[in-house]
Image (cartoon, rainbow, N blue to C red; front, side, top):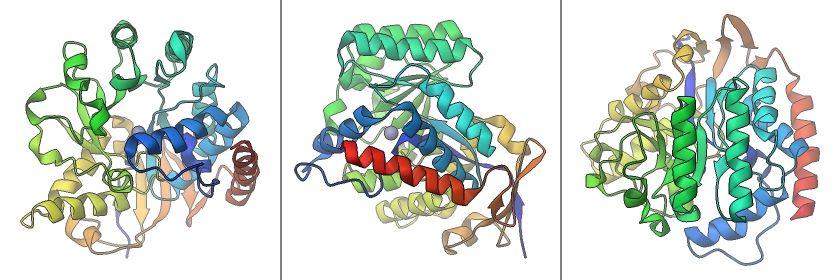
Length: 340
Ligand SMILES: [Zn+2]
């Protein structure tokens, strides 16, 4: 018995974090989300070079495909390897056969020059017909000038902005600072602490597993009028898993919740990459509906067709050798971990 659906979309990912697993422990135990950023992610992203970025994207794209995810909306940062990084990610995903929407997360954490170089990487990639959004790390690490420049660049290029909003309490100023800049085509990741009445336009990417992992709280996405989609925030791209966790978090908050709400968030992700509607994923289980999937762990794709091409057959990728990708990624992970 098997069911076929369109491709799944991971609406907020960090492909660069694919090599983080097994990294050495931080110099101290982080005690809140701000320290998790400083002691883990902001050390990791500074250690990345283009070769590591390439193999993290190859591995992340492979793992997405193996879970029936045919499109990734990525948010990238590598302050010591900015120029060309988005093309490296786009090329790696294309090689595996997965669609990607790239963004470079602009920030003033590394001074105004770093912010300028991040903006320029977004501009270069999009001007060269790359598929993407303009990335911004988060309002709390950007000056007003940088936020305005990113919003202006996105408007000029006819794309939205992909930005973390109110993931933790340190970003409390974001609604006020982004009001007047945000538009309907923006993608707002997390919104855990975004006040319901803030009224920011855009799509909200809900990342329930990551939010649990960082202990930042539950976003309660049903309170917003915005479109809600699901992301992994860098923890793989297994969207049926994300759906199950989204349902459980919703249910934990409200015992009358049904899986249909989280399923609607999963399906809304396709609005961000409409071509995925024509992709075909054949699953190991039938029927693939919210009530079945919520209570059936371990459903996996048998065959995936992207843009008319079979890219996963009998559970194995057709365009790349999965063992080779994993071996190369492990070599780059060892280099990355040594730098940390
Ligand atoms: Zn994120």
